[in-house]
Image (cartoon, rainbow, N blue to C red; front, side, top):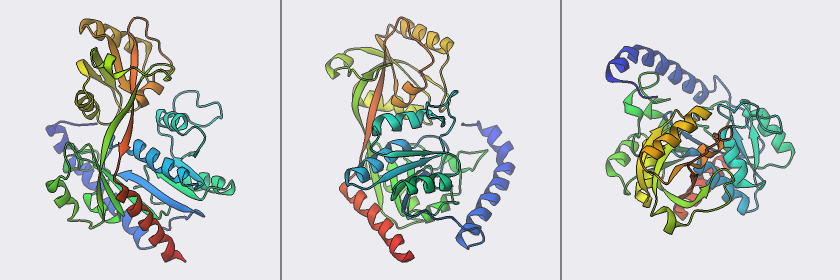
Length: 341
């Protein structure tokens, strides 16, 4: 959530209180006052400093797929933020991100869902998991980790410089000192010297750039039929999404060659209603658009609505990272694991 300048200054005293609490908590974990619990395996955490989307879910997917591809028994530990009503058939929360991960991983990686990620991880460990990917884990200090990845959105790297509730920072920027690897997403061009210079004030750990690539455009709701590029490049589209950084998605669409005739953004993880679906169709008709387009995550939040007049498509994306990233990540994890033995 972004707030205006006047409201930011009104909320600033509350941010100071929040910052004090966050700093004391981090100090307590760093100095052994509070003790993190350790799972019997290697834990790789993916997190960020700010609220809102930085591309954590695609990176969690990227890491899990590669670990599984190397024959490692891998699980993802996630809280399951804002689970949809009704949950899944297994009785666990079924948020948009969980549904996306489950679909993309297709059983190759286990999903552990729940607020107590230690208890969930122990259950998975008893079933053979040896590698854990901790989703949104930077602030989850209760669980020890072997490698900490911090993601930074190049379009708004430090949330306006203020902590919650006045700004979007969940922790002071100095929390970068805990990072083993830094990944910068949504950089228009790499490298970004100014951003890297600020990062280097707090850490000398490796910095990598993640590039978002369009894999395919899928027809909703089945998500099985791809829309050929020669067709979608000719169409006029209305884009909509409910993610942490909607402007980044709209910018990506234009960069990939889509003709965007209109846009509409909703709050992150928003579950769409029938009324909103009708409004989106009306917007598409006013813009003389041929179709609606959203993110793959949004597709899972459209499960309770229908579109009667306008076709809907979603973008399936992936992250592209250099080979050196995998080596740096495994080196960090092995270094921490070696220090424990």
